[in-house]
Every structure is written in structure tokens, then in C-alpha cells.
Image 1: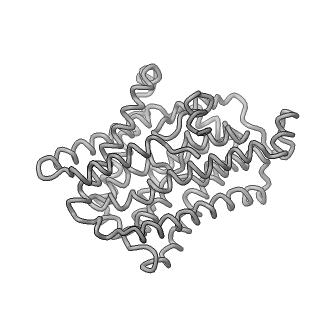
Image 2: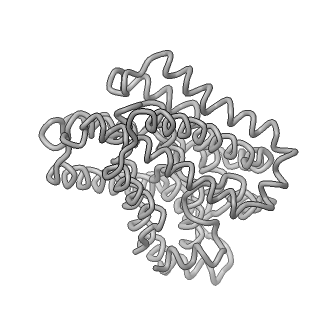
Length: 363
């Protein structure tokens, strides 16, 4: 069962913010640095996204629409249904964070890694995750405006405009400059990975410092955190079951069902944290807590599930035959999974095939 080292770094950052929160002028500097870090993150996301690979993946449009429906339709509906748990199990701020979790896009690299482990359709997972990340830049703020309303830290038209300026504009700039910056980013990928992670740690520190100064942690107790984890476990279980059996009912073959299950049941910590800092302001600390817990939970559960999928008798038969007898659509030819995985790099898991992902997942 993998314990993501990055989650440990996030928890350490939360502890630092609890002990030494930024106050006064230091808080102003931290907020300004976090704003710049968010813009840099989305510029790098845009510069890494391969438009060619995304267009190649459009041929498998039924699969991608299924993943998008799971991410931006089914997840939000389940989040809205969880409102019935307030105030018996969840406080209103925790529920807002849970609903926000249901609105963020899917992961890219962890979906690819687990799909590869389970012998699924890796090119489809690459493109599905990329489409979800791209769609989330627009859909997540719009859904937050519609569903969170006043709960989203005073969400308004000004907040939506801030989202567009701070997230979408840098992303589009990265896409525009990709032809000149793509080679540099590829050559310095390890260093830029540290920039990604460091930027998000800065965002987390600023958000949790503001939460400590505002005294919001008095609203959360051990019992509430335990209830939140139970609700998230139920949410993950439902999504894993629906994406697997729902994809079967839709006529997808085994390899495609694996890609749908792992891409459609996950939420991106890398995309969600910067968005929450813009959407929720001083309330971002509680808003991102459900997402951080869900991120680690999905890694642990999906690592075990991917091993079981790889050991299925059906998987062994497919590997021996070299094909998927049930698959209605073969994996797209000409799509390089590793190249596309590199195209959308984020602080998730390393790309499949690397020694690092093997060590991370097998642990």
C-alpha cells in the first residue's frame, strides 16, 4: 500500500503553518508568492500539454465522454447528495470542501500508472486524463459558481474573472509558447518537477496559515475527521463500482474498462489545490482538506485494485493471446503513452515504465 511521499510533504507543510503561520506583512508576501506560484503552475501545464496527442485521442471519443461524465456529472451529483449528511456527520465548511473535491478534474499520471499496472488501455488513459485536466480549467470554476454559491468563500463574478486571469490565461500562454519552450521543459523535467511540487507546497502553506490566523481549525474535531474519511471511502467505492460495471454495460472491453475505472474515479490534487486557493480565499485550508485525504485514499485503494486486475485470469489470457477478446475498440495506434504522460506532468505519480513508479506503487 503506497504512502505518497508528496502527501507526507504536504502534511509537514500543514504542520509548519500550524506552528509558524504567516502573519501581517509575512502573510502578504506569502499570498503574493502563492498567487505567482499558481500562475506558474498553469503556465507549465499549458506548455507541457501536447495538442497533437490530445487530437489523436479524439478517435476514442466514447471512452473519453464516459470519463468526463463520471468526473463532471456523476461525482458532482454524489457531492450534492452528501448535503444530507450536514450537520449530522459533516460541518458546512467540510461539506463545501467535499463538494469542491467532486468538481475538480481527474488525475493524469496516477491514472496512467495504475492502468498500465492492470494491463489496461494506457493510451486511452493518457488522453482521458489530459482531456479532463483541460476541461477542468473551465468546468471546475463554472460548477463551483453554480453549486457552491456563497459557500465558496464569497464566490462571485469577480472570483470567476480572477480564475480566468490566474489559471486560464497562463495556461493559454503556455500552449502558445510551447513550440519554443517544449524542448527546454523536456531537458529540465526533473528540476521543473521540483518547481511544481514546491509551488503547491507554497500554496498550501499560505492557505493553512490564513486558516490558522482566522481560527477555522476550531471547527474540526477528530470525530468530524473520522466521519469525513468514512464518507470519502464510500464515495470512492461507489465511483469504482459504477465506472467498472457501468463501462461493461456500455459495451467497453476489459482494457477500456480499466482505463475508465482508473481515470473516472480519481481527483487531481495538483489541479485542485491551486484552484481552491483562488476560489475559497481564507477558507481554503478546510476546503482542500477533503481533497488531500481523498488523494491518499485513492492511491492506496487503486494500487491494490490494479494488482488484482493484473492477476485476473482474464488478464492472463489477454496477455498470452496478445489481444483483448472483449475490446470493442483497440488502443489507438500511433499514440506514445510515455510522451503523452510527459506532456501533462504534475505532482502525482511518475510516468509508467520508470523505476520510480514501480517502487512507489509496489511499496
